[in-house]
Image (cartoon, rainbow, N blue to C red; front, side):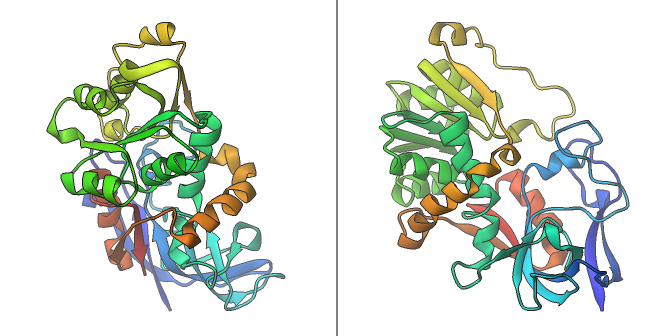
Length: 332
């Protein structure tokens, strides 16, 4: 049996290029004692993976050159040498970017394919959803009545942030996105009170129009001009949760910081970055609260599905370009 897997062969400078990667054929590994072999069904591509392609020190180790990359995946166990996990079980793990993966059983989490579609364990009910939940409720200290602004609002995380805020009693939810079609989706399907296309004018001007009374919480997925605009519209005691800054991930020079940070003195505002890995203690609470919302249709989600491991790289580049609506997933 042949396993196709994506290797990083050179570290991208600026935008990643196809020649920085290689789709390699290898033998399907055999599980040893305490391990399982999984045939991946869906793999995830996410913006944070761009950072791991760099050698710069960060919160996660860089991908190794000449070796298969990693990422979230869900699949079916086809061989098991471990207690507690059987052939036919479905598991969530972190060995994506390949068709087959072998791992110690402790790195595989069983999921119920009958309770929800397998792909949702990579998105709305997985790390993506927990990121939205923890960032909004814990890091940004959201409270009922807050006005919330979300950038990258049609993406996997941003779309959940806005909907959770509405379900939790936000007074107003505003989103930014990169197309008029996505703006329409935010308002008509996801229930945002207002949304704007950041390509149609200055973000600061559009935000002031959409939130004339300012914002109490800003959930940042973009950075750059969005962060500066949010600081400019921040109400007294406002909170900013920094989840990602996709606008600067491919910069070859350091991006300038917001020019209006002094306004935080006036507003007594707070900016705090966070990583979902620091908040896994919220997982049971997250599943208990968000699961029923998803099942009932109160919380809606979209997936952009790309077919085939051979298109894994293009799917990842699509995330950086903003091609996806909701979670970008590769179906193998």
